[in-house]
Length: 263
Image (cartoon, rainbow, N blue to C red):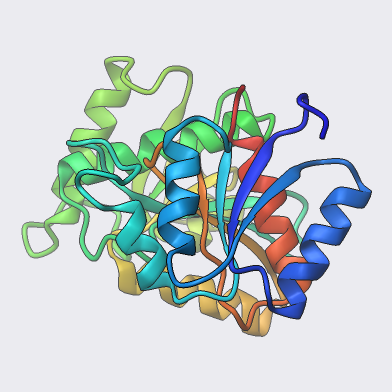
């Protein structure tokens, strides 16, 4: 084993797609693996992470709820008390010039202010690890104004205030705005929205899981996007791709999660 390569604790890598991911990662010398099999594989893989012997936890042929039960165990898990777990995605969309980071599409139904704060921190951290020094963050909604009928717009205002106070470091945060405005400068110009985020967003923050998940499924179906996804907030990134995901998607998820780690 090469001690300079990050280590991945992987649960039940018995399906063909996961096996291909391991073979490719080993061939490209991007990671080494600790493989766990059997009914208690999730618990043993989580313990491997807890003891500092793995940099990423990855799901193989195991139900997500089984792996998460072990990861979130109050005594033996890898989510510290008071920490927020969220799902982060990075999409490579054919024809689009840069990756799009977005959250949350899979874990938090309707983020409150503390959860939204964590989501912004996690996505900004992801952007920096992907080489974006000053991420541009779009707080998305269908409206451009705070509206008491839509409580997330008030949460967004608090996030912008915290950004102005330096809570997230070097960032530009704008919103609420719709996805088109966030990614298309002409749309923002027509609407008269003055923000450095308009047309330039690196990160899309969604108001709820319905919006985030719909965006996820839409761009994969119609735009044939390849998406990397992982859980943030845990001791290490947790890769929980679907068993039906392609080899490319699983590999992209692993490689992106590895970029989120520091040894």
